[in-house]
Image (cartoon, rainbow, N blue to C red; front, side, top):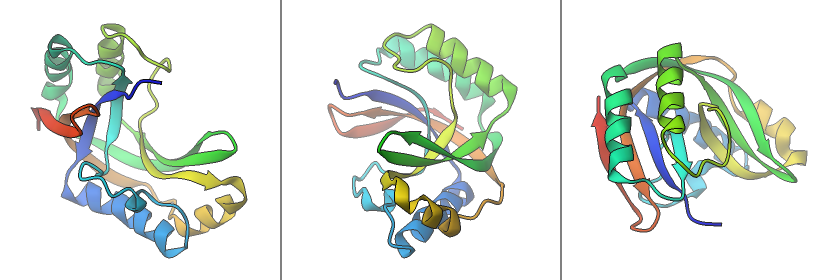
Length: 168
């Protein structure tokens, strides 16, 4: 499977802190957490798309479609479990319809998607044993919290780098 290039929406400082509180709560409970991922690019984000290749015209289109919407007010919401034997735990993000429409237009104009539609979320932990899910629910608060998404970046797994596409 090829390494996937991504376009990602980043929260403001308060939103990043809210997600990092969830990451820390999981770690404090002795559970997997995105805090365990020590890569320099590891920061709370909402993936817009992840594909084998992102061309410069794709970046320009993303900037044109999403840039004018930033900053956008969203809300951290409930939890989602993704995967099989071990699951990824994610915090769902409620976003305005205009953002959903813009992301779907971007996806329609790009190639290589593994999943249809868009499920806005922030990953909290990966490879969580199903038997640990009750502890996850105890550790992570379920309160919805505002989240301001302020910029769009590109993750390049070949270069192990990120760069801004549309600052808010």
